[in-house]
Image 1 (cartoon, rainbow, N blue to C red):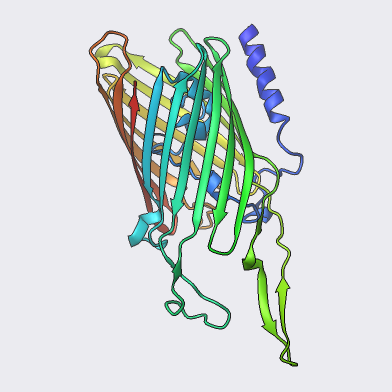
Image 2 (cartoon, helix red, strand yellow):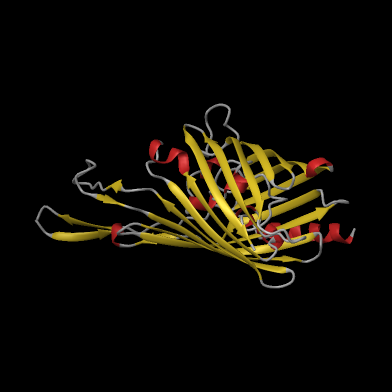
Length: 357
């Protein structure tokens, strides 16, 4: 009973950090937030079922869904994932891809430190200007988007785990740049005779507004008297895409071949988008093979008016390959793959690998 009261108190305290200006699911504010890439899940293992694993995500990739799951890193974990966004070069967004690299290290008996970097690439885009709007006449440029995340997770008891992530989002071109700072926080509660019932909640992207600066805000003009002057615009600040995630999962365990069937559900309250409702299922065999699928629902999805691309169906699979025969050792490598449908765009593929020591 004490644990239930503790987790309830933690949820209440965490929810109090949500800014009063947040209006969950407010469609009128759609597209007005900055650093929208903070809402892109870069990890193949969790995107295979739509990121529904708020309650039961484990390891380094938990730093996106719910940092509390980072506390389950045994010793050292290294992970990498490459995502071909919306079809990549064959899709509508030419050359769009994401590379993510992370490292998790247990630094205390009950504490794990994690770091990961997510970099977006859009390929070479044509330069167009007011005087020369035709593409292909002025060369190309390559925007740079990068998120740097540093987090810490702690196991307070065998059933309660929590953590926090400090993140820096940077966006730049050759003549303009901007950056934003945000904090994620999350908790997980595990209960049941075999830890089969899990509950999780995470608050993401809470922080001050961001704005842009650089020579791209200035424009040199010539008036009727042939005098040259420069006009500089004042950039407006943009709030970050804050969201609150609540998830629940349950494991059905079978002794034969160490089978496990996990069902999960999650609700995402978005400050600048419509709310999301996600359900998913994962099947595991011999503690080595997993297949999963999920469905992300958003109001307007079935009528062709979805506000987010990666909604609808998703699927994925993982293979865990042990590298040590020592009893109790978790040393091994995991290969992950996921596919997400994207309304009106080509689907998103992700493939990744993680190594545990």
